[in-house]
Length: 218
Image (cartoon, rainbow, N blue to C red; front, side, top):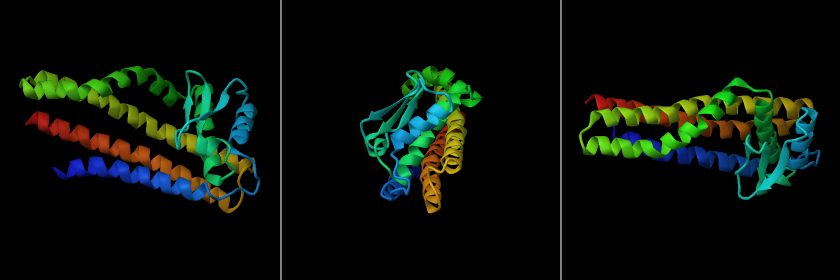
């Protein structure tokens, strides 16, 4: 199963490359409406009664995210002031996460609750695993696998969250006319490419978990 390590390394890189290429393509396509992503994000939030949620500019490229702790939609430099199709799709997607949080969407509540645990287990599992194999202590190996499985669970919850946020985004930008005609197809391709990275991450994690289980049973 040595090929798995090549898959673990190459698949995420390929998925990330697809996202960057797709975003770069549609972030050059200017919208007919001419409104920037930050203004549209603000309008969608206000329309959903989320006046308290801030929209801020965040350093970097494709570093866009929603922070439930500060209740902030952070848009990257390449998105914040952009009037392009890709930028508006990304901004609407992040606003989708803010709406999920405000409406207490069950998957986001679960992910938020287990995040502190996953943040710890994702850092320590490999050391526990190495210690288990080094000292031939199978109990440590099984503990390491359990710790790793929390990360898999986290990704399993994350994927439908991302799909739902994209679905909300597409519905909003279509119904409100933020994008029209072929612009809508560009937004959909941008969000689909982004969702693909989460799918790849989940598949890779599941394969890693299966390999760990296989090795432990030997």
